[in-house]
Length: 339
Image (tube, rainbow, N blue to C red):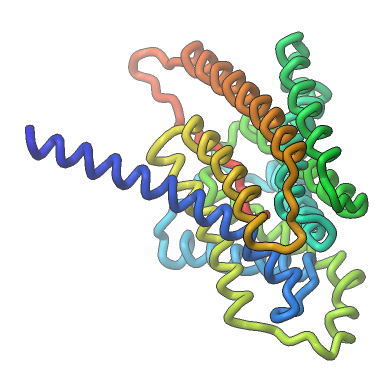
């Protein structure tokens, strides 16, 4: 009995450790990216170059983990047709999301960018309805209205609003919403189920290529022409390693807890980012209206998450296999956690 109690306590400790690790890495990576892009010490105001570096690093590390060390097994079932019609669109949208989201940090504060990202469920729902994945209902309209109203109030309370940064951030939100839609189509219509590491194994090289093309035309000449730019190998390598560790922490949290836990942890992380950024960065000035609007938006996001989780639970119940059959485990995670 004592051994069983100790085992339960140890499992709980490990679970909470993974959750804290996810919150720390997720929040820290956002601050790390902002510092690398904005600080005079690093002098690396190249969001395309930074994101490209992340994807190249992730591609190499995923290959080593899956093919060389074979720590993680890549699921079977991937074909050329699925890669072209599903993985490439996901990789392109992932690249667009990270590129535009990181670029927004050059114009707006971390806290305000986080507040604008609360509109994500609205974009996902609208695109989901258009793709036939979601059904319009009065309840969902109410939830979407609450989130939208909260984001509008938070924006109204922003003291130093920069519309260029807002456009970049909204572009990143649309890209992320499209990525999630493509991922759902990949699972529902193609029947491919991937854990985050396997997903990054397939997506990272594609995203790197999608970023490399615009980098050549938009940032390559600037980086070469800027005589003050130096490649801070240690800092940029640590930044890329933290990005990969963050994606790995998502996998660990989901494998040890549930979808509900990762979503609740995500909400906690959002508040940590908003509040801590006010202490770390001089361009962040929070107002009462900011926080009030963001609280309304987060309440709407919580209602949306609750609605989605109930829907997923009822779907799993209705799809319970008969005796002798097995149902595959689907691990879903938002891998857009570096910005």
